[in-house]
Image 1 (cartoon, rainbow, N blue to C red):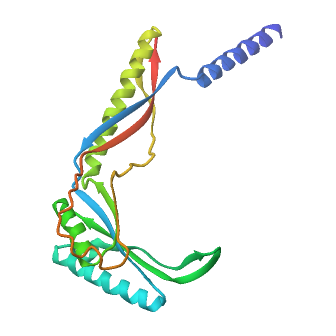
Image 2 (image 1 turned 60 degrees about the vertical axis):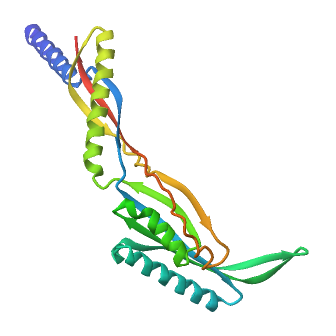
Image 3 (image 1 turned 120 degrees about the horizontal axis):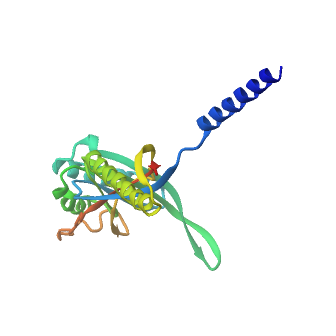
Length: 237
């Protein structure tokens, strides 16, 4: 009987030891890596609009519609397809003024803005100047992007991974261990910020600025495509 009890105790201890070995946490070193790749923008978005004030809503709306039609005709003449022109906002608001502490309704403001996608960035200046000449009195900057972003994003990811591995290797070596296989990888996608060329043009009434002959100078510069990854590596003694 004593022998059977002893054997049972040994079996339980071995089972517990095996279970403990199976649930032991792996030895890891976790590091965050960063990668940045620069690219030259080859696509742009230009936001242009018309803002008209009048005592009557209908009059302001009609004037805005006429000016916007002229703008879109000019854009088509520059080779911009209708599919690349998108209405980004249309607003009708009351125009108030304060006289001797009293608020008086002066009229109404009707605004219409469009966003123009430009795949030939050499046309950006012509689009801005042509829109102003056609009646635009609101310009909200230029937003830049790269058509083939995916290839640059993948390159940035590779650089971020290598950065994480290099840093993890230093930590492992300093602690007297060796870097092993990858245990887990996670990408942090915070979203890419499209650079914008600050630009603000606003005339008082639709049609003002139509005599402008100067060519607007724009420079896309370069964009940074960034990637961030967190990698856990197994470490070996």
